[in-house]
Length: 410
Image (cartoon, rainbow, N blue to C red; front, side, top):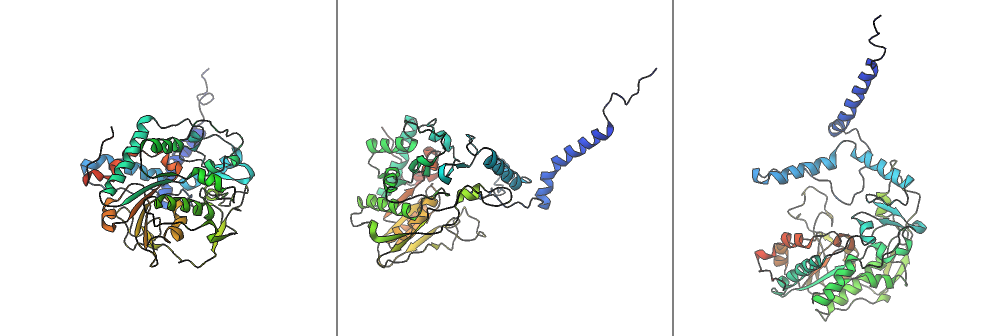
């Protein structure tokens, strides 16, 4: 008797269906790339997606291939939907997860904390600066200071702390503090004992100021208007050691009125797939300053000419363009290389300078400095970005050696 050839073998129908489903899954991302099938809102990532790179010849082929890879990483099919599902599941299932790629941590009393840029690793002090790292930071800052000094320009480096540095009491209960110094504490202490560069760590200033009122937003990575004001005062006090005529506005220059503040950037990062806000918290720590005496109203003005690395078709803002404030009641000029934390200084720092120019990146544009001839250059870099910066990279990007010989450390 012969065996039935189909009794023990796989079913052709299910084989065919499996193959079709497999091919469909392979092709879905490509179909979305061409036909835009994914209608989920674009995730708020605080950065622009990578653009298609420009081919600059065979000598730059490696950079072109890397650019193509970055482009597809940011544009693959159904990326928006997958990211939102990922955020939704983590918020719903792992509210206190230790996963390094969770962008938002839900803390106590409805406080949210940003955990990107290896925040947990730095909080646990598993990462620290080696002696050579500290020497490299010193070399970068002294190179910048000396290059400016040759041109009669003052220099200051200032670091706003991360929110969890100022408000650790609202972190999730499983996040125990470490007795080891943070990277910022390491660098501040090293610069204090090994260099005379004006280096300001704002951490203790803001920790002390929270006894007056809240100075960071509950649902945002940033300080509120009061925190920005406290930081501004410390900044101007630091500048006054080089420019004695400067004196910051006093604490009682404003009345601080609580206001309904829009949900912060961490609420946006924690959006679930329906696009609704998480129900964990609402912003309650916003304040607005009401000047008790008339002060010049200083709003940022966008430079009409985009910098070389920006798309000229992008809407002008202080994120896509250099911007500045103008005050005819003051004199002098300041140039600030910065991130988003310096935005709170627009109406404040301009009280002391006729013009303040704000440039949103950390590497220097020495051509801009030589063209504008400021009285002072300020580097502002928030703690979480300082933690991951390579100072030797910044030295290379600055290219100051093209116009000045770098001094070697002993």
